[in-house]
Image (cartoon, rainbow, N blue to C red; front, side, top):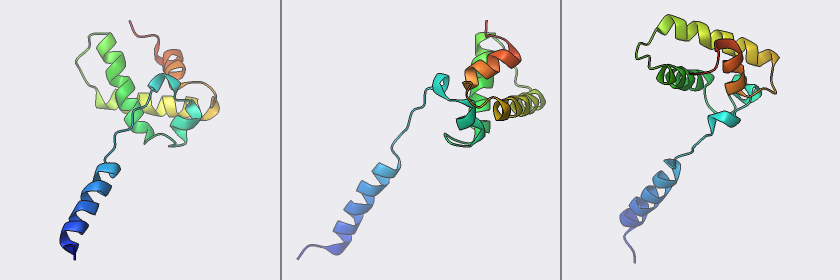
Amino acid sequence: MKNPTLIGTAAMIVFSTAANAQVTVDVAKITCDQFSGFKITDPLNIAIWLNGYYNGKRDNTIVDPQALKENYNKLRNYCIVNEKVTVLQAAQTLFGAPK
């Protein structure tokens, strides 16, 4: 007879590995509907990524938490009204193209 503890441990390892599988997302394909509807992840996560992307393109290493919050709110409000637009297009409309 097999050891139930060993079988249980092996099953836990298999299931925990599957649960920790990484998922990648192409931000260029995220629509405003997906963004504002929490369909990919918390929209704040995407806004933080966009903030880093834009600041990186501009060689800006300063993080302004208040501006990030204001820009997130602007982007969220824009996306609620413009569901078919991609989040990158919305960000470019609101904040300009990255340099």
